[in-house]
Amino acid sequence: MNQIKPIVTLCKYGKIKIKLRSVMDKNGITRNQLAKLTDTRFEVVNKWYNGNVERIDADVLARLCFTLGCDVGDIIEYVP
Image (cartoon, rainbow, N blue to C red; front, side, top):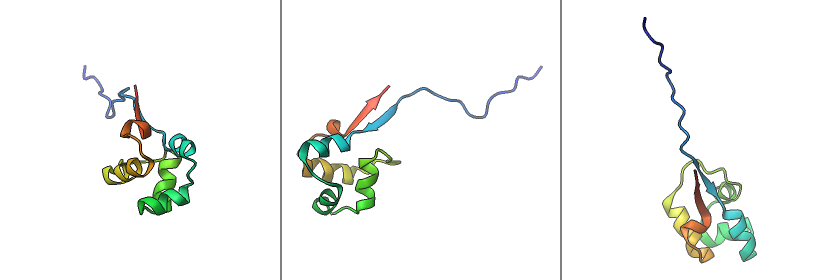
């Protein structure tokens, strides 16, 4: 007999956690302030703040790290 193979295979590969909110809270900076300082639209900063980033833009991440004086690992984390 023919076996039916699934079209989609689910993999448990973990996820990326965005921790911008905690870094901003430690620095006492608002989303509006960060948007202005990084020359980034508020909507983009707000997505990072709420952890709703679909694609990680390396340029935005670099500007966030530079402005906040932190490392990439302070903002994003791999969670298995």
